[in-house]
Length: 474
Image (cartoon, rainbow, N blue to C red; front, side, top):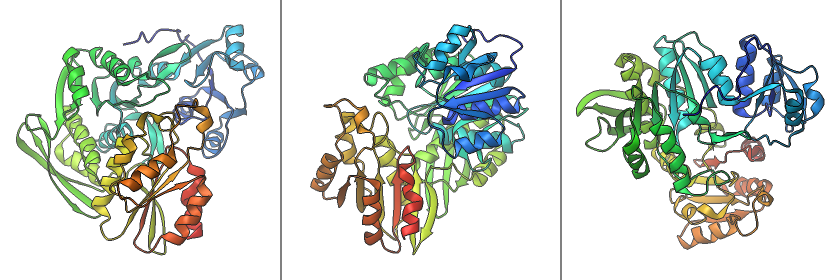
């Protein structure tokens, strides 16, 4: 684990400035600091709703662009976002003035997690859903948790919470920390319990290859304290290999017969999914949730195991799962028009796209599933998954693939080709179509959709507000 005292945060801090404040995590941190009573300001070069409005409603001054004068008056502390470079004008001014600075994880450790027991969720997929369910279970158990999560929990209408209870729930992000600390964010935390949902290649702008990803996860897992508990997914050979160097207590969860926590029979009666859980080969309980898809049930299984470890009663766990309302942008129904349902999902990695489509199939069997995909991440816009995406859309009756909107960011020769993907999907017999822009997709869907269709829109970005624009046209 990384020394949390690196770039020491001074005592007596009252004013804090955040560089790149409009990111999901940095914005949440700004709000937490404001709620804790600090004088908070921030700056960013892309200030737009909803985060800009949310921060201003909190009374946080948000300054447009990065300028040296934004640090006039010299705040006591500057929190530097991970996308900020050392050439940033505010970074240069911060260093010129000798102002204390830190990263987001360091700020969380000092001001939020200090004195609490951290529960951390890591893995290539499922971090947001798993940490959200865990936070809701703790809340329903009366444990008044704090959390910071990468999605908006509908139960709280927020992605953060400051509680007075003993636990702090956080997503363990493998992405780098800051320009002055290229180590992964999750290396900063010392969790009492952690989950690893799986390890795959992602973040091609940060990691060279799968071995590089495994190296970073290996540092995290091997650094867990011997008294910590690690819940590790059982059907991932990358995870299995990394466990050899773990010194903490390890329990496996999933579907393997020798795992202490195992998913049993699943029945779907929309909107409910009922599923059995076995602990040490004995039936632990029957649970139900509005979430659907095997991947979500595995996420819930990890949380059930952690909750049981924390001695939360089974009936409380069951009640929490039954009342969990989900997360915005995770299989979220944005609206219905003329019998056509428009659903939004954050899926972008090939595994996430495939599993999301499989999940949708389990609850939408009376009409067509139309998959609309925007490759937008630094990884999906590269050609590293060009061939993998070909096998991800089999669950769709109609496929619409947009040209990556930010392709110029990727060096020539390494760019993902949406038109090639469409050609390859057609060779597999799929009804696939390529589009240069979002407007063309909306025009196409307006004429091709019919009552009973479910339009599943997958992107990690705003996708030019395609959801509402399509609903308006329908």
